[in-house]
Image (cartoon, rainbow, N blue to C red; front, side):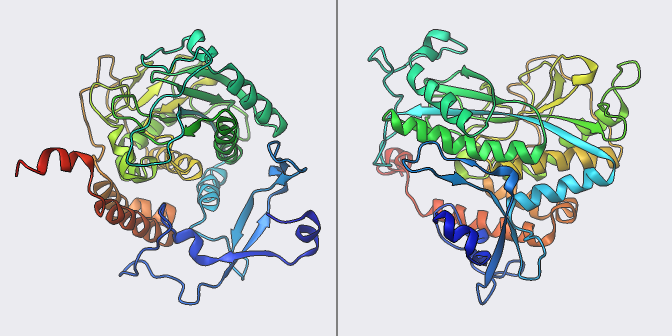
Length: 416
């Protein structure tokens, strides 16, 4: 934060290089054979993207916000900056004459303020004076419990030029979902980033927390960030997933096959924290496989019924805790590799697949190992990003392992 005069009159904005190697707990990984810190922790340089300029409507003084891109002193994009990672993947599509289109759906929970992490989270009290206890999917009356908060979300979003397509009550107690209008992947990733800030701020106004944890409460469903994807031919303006007569194209099937093949190798991006893997449970609505099917919500890859022009693939694997730039980049990378390698998917599933686990890793270390050992991921994301990301995630896992859980005290204290 800085005064407007300083922003326009000062030198180029800089920050230390170590910011892109910081863990969620504020620590830094140790150097190893693949990852080494910049020994001088020199400056990175930041350039404003003025297309992202918008107001900060909750500030008391007139305030603007502006997203920047990170560069080295020599002017090269910083390979570990998430926004640059997404740009790198989009360049692959651009070189083919393609333009991806995405539409994220973000789920989140409203919870009572929780200042002691040793205590579990609880649903908040709505306008009726009673907290939600049951699951009321798509219930308008459940949504009305938080009318004032929802009004604030819409008002704050409108002031920032953020368009909400739909807001619904999801499966969990005080669980909501916001659907964004489809568009350019970079612009939509920016919107997800800004929406998270906005929703948290609106919730605080009403003495609540908004959390995007993947699995915040033990006996409630997890929160996802589903990503709908299609690809446009820039020359013709047509969806490459639909043929002249509306039929599915080989490119569409290969896009699906790319997700089936490579999603297990980027799961650590779609599910970036230890908590993320608690969402992948059998018999829940969260997918535990990379099967695909038409309008089938029990598989990881759903093809919604639509007109040929709107044909798309919904990736249901990412959690709402995922970095929007990285998760969109990873999903598009899977599809790209499927198309260029002309991969073929298995048969679509029309049955209930909630208990059919397939391919997805069940924990963070396993997921990171699949990512770092994939030659395709190293090539498409770059060695610098892969080495840095793996180092961060292994350090976060070690931090988690240093904490003794209530489950361990409950069942091991006197029984082993």
